[in-house]
Amino acid sequence: MTTALKPNLARCIWTSALFAVLAMLVAAAVRQILGMDPVVQWSTLVVVAYIFGAVGFIVGIGGFDYWWPWIIGKDIDPHDHSQHGAYSWRDYFKFNTDHKVIGIQYIVFTFIMFLIGGMFAMIFRAELANPGYQVLSDEQYNALISQHGVIMIFVFLVPVFAGIGNYVIPLMLGAPDMAFPRVNAVSFWLLPIASFTLLSSFAFGSFDTGWTGYPTLSEQSPFGGTLFQIGVIIAGSSSIATAVNFLVTIVTMRAPGMTLFRMPLLVWANLATSALVVAATPFVAGAMFMAMFDREMGTNFFTIAGGGSAIAYQHIFWFYSHPAVYIMVLPGFGIISEVIATHSRKPVFGYRAVAFSSAGIAVLGFSVWAHHMFASGMASWLRVPIMISTLLIAIPTGIKIFSWLGTVWDGVVRLTTANLFALGFIIAFTIGGLSGVMLAVVPFDVSITNSYFIVAHFHYVLFGGSILTIFAGFYHWFPKVTGRMYNERLGRLHFWIVFIALNVTFFPMHYQGLMGMPRRVADYAPEFGWSNTLISVASFALGASTLIFVYNMIHSARHGKPAGANPWGGLTLEWLLSSPPPVFNFPVTPRVIGGPYRFGEEGARHAIIPEPEPAETEKVGA
Image (cartoon, rainbow, N blue to C red; front, side):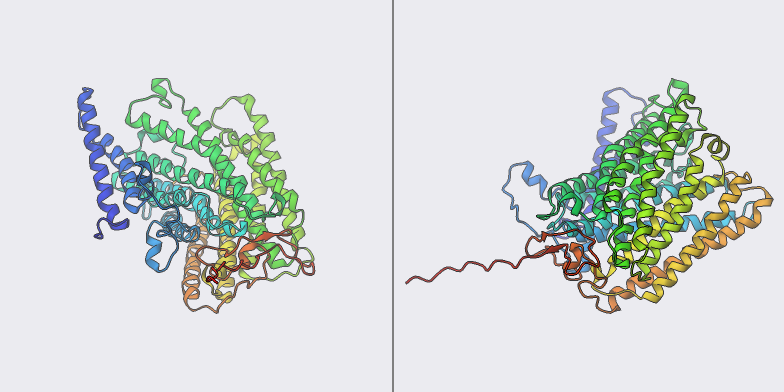
């Protein structure tokens, strides 16, 4: 079989082009048959080209190579593992069903997108360093800030946790793989498609509406606004498929003896997160479809002139997007529980309370969406109930904070890089949580909602919260993934630069907001000049710190000291395996015999791996 016919990135080029061209021809033919004028409407044809080109990409990478023969009734080998496992670096650029390979694909790709989104932030922070216009026009500023938000949320924060979970959770459960390995692979390969769609919008006049895409602004934006909507729909499809996979894996594939209250807290966090994704993500997909239909098909879901409601879009969008905040932090909460317990050598304080608080956040997350709309002209009677529910959701979050502090208290705390990021997260997230309680109060929120105070709160929650937990997880499981130790000195340098620059970047934004500086503007009053200069310099330091991390990871993966199976002395199941783990995980299904955090108990074990039974041999005849 030639390279052009094998399932790989080369085949993706011609299959994507073929599907796109065929879709455009069919769309033009349908318009001709229906008597639509003009027959060749380029915006409609480009939309169908992107959608069906994405299907062609999945075909090209090999997403249907197993399913299509099954669909048409051919015999297939259920034990075919030809697409499973990485035996060279080339396997990471192919369709692969091994959850560990997929986890690394997720992590590396989403981190590349994190660097691109961060680069956009550096560019518009250069514009904001001084009053007046330096490097960007209003249109360019709006395009970059919109791309920054969408990339960081939809193709970094949400899927990077899916990557960490993909690698770790089947190991923690004692499972051989995820429940649906091929769906898992397709879920990943949808992400490059979504990212290409979003970034290619620059070629069509990038969307400039902010990451929320509110009508009526979205109806007036260039064609890039339609590509934003398609990109979010594709990224959402990836999230839903991944979440279903996690739910089925966690519910049905736990090792014998692993009851719900013997599961590690990262598994609990992913269980709650996956339920949120499955329940909430269809709402944002629906909102994007309706907004796209308004733009490209002449419907009037949100078009005010046609009887639509722009406020309805906000209700639908935030009914997803506030639970999405917890989708972006709940897995991080699970990571923090693993890191703090392991590196403090102490059982998690209030294990069951922490587990139930994750479920509580998932439930309450659907009752607080409208606090983003206090100033939007929504029904006034809804404000007080939403304010109360928003204040109440601080309770399960507070339970986690006090649990982590109780776990650290009187523990044997080791200030490894992973633990430093975990402890730094507690401080930063508490600051973001306190400002969130302030914003839950209707009068305060209405007076401050369009100011930089919101930017400060949002970034303390998502950078000081989510991204610090991601770094904690990277450092914690790096030895397990690579089999080598990272450079601890460089790791600590990375932490201190990030922690200091984070606070110098985002804390002054509270002051700016209280003094009246509006957000989403490329220019501002001269009295905010000194604070913006300080913020921009600190943000450049924050961006530069990432280079230390990248160097440490790449150099240590090749030249670091051998890590051994369990360098941290962890008790959860992944630490019972070699580093890196075997292709098919456990040689024999492990048996769970106790809780995952029984540090300090003599002879305590979470699980054992039974000896494999000797293979039966045929007796040669008498």
